[in-house]
Length: 116
Image 1: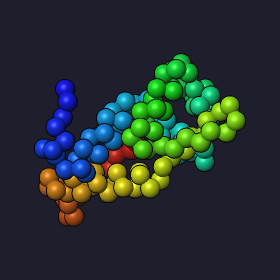
Image 2: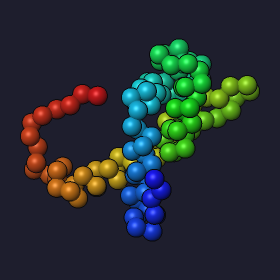
Image 3: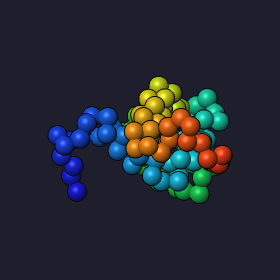
């Protein structure tokens, strides 16, 4: 189903793309791995996940398409790392979105903590 971008702000369209990229636990795990390492080669990531090389490559492609990671070619390999600026921007936009719907504003702490 195609979305008419004229009906939504640019921020919402970008957030939807990021949310889609984050909608798979394997991709979230890749982000965790990259957060632990300064950079990582695809083969190193494959060794830490229960997926084939081609599946990991597809997940990396989705994360890169969303702008959450960067890939730098180094000879025959591609080294991946987090796009810190894009992640900060996404965090700020999600925070703004959720504050806007009244669930995460100041003073609404329930005392619950969540671990990822």
